Length: 170
Image (tube, rainbow, N blue to C red):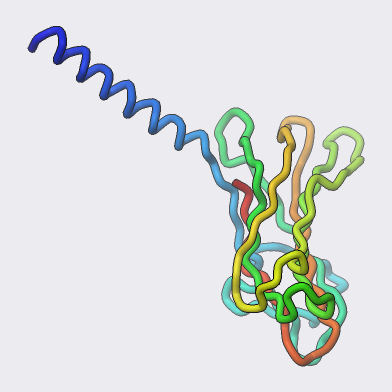
C-alpha cells in the first residue's frame, strides 16, 4: 500500500472515530410519565393509560408527579440544553387545561433547591397530541446536586382531559 493510500485510510478511520465519539457524547435522558411518582395526596385523582398520565374520570384541579433525573453518562456531565415534552393540551393557549414540566435541582449537602427551567403547554397553540421543547442554559453537577422534573396537569372541567406521556432532556 502506498503512503498516500495509508494517509487516506488513516484519515477515514480518524474521521469515523470522531463522528462516533461526538454522537456518544450526545446523551439523552428520557422517561415515560407513568414511570414518575404522583404525590400521595393525588391518590384516586389520576390514572395511567400505557405511558400517559391523565386525570381519573370526573376529577378536576391539579396533579403533580415527580420524575427522578439520572446521569446517563458513566463519567462526565451531560451537555443537555433542551427539555422536550410529549403531551395533549385540549385548549392549546387557553388555561382551562395545561401541562407543565419544571426542571429542578437540590443540593445534596444543604437541601436547598432551585428551578432551572419551566415548560408550559399554553405557550403552544396546538390542541392534539404533540411534543414541543424549550431550551435552557445550565451546567449539570451530579456530584453536588440531584435533579428532578415535576410534571403538573391542570384540568378546569371534565369536558376534556389533558395528558403527558414523556419528558426528555437532550
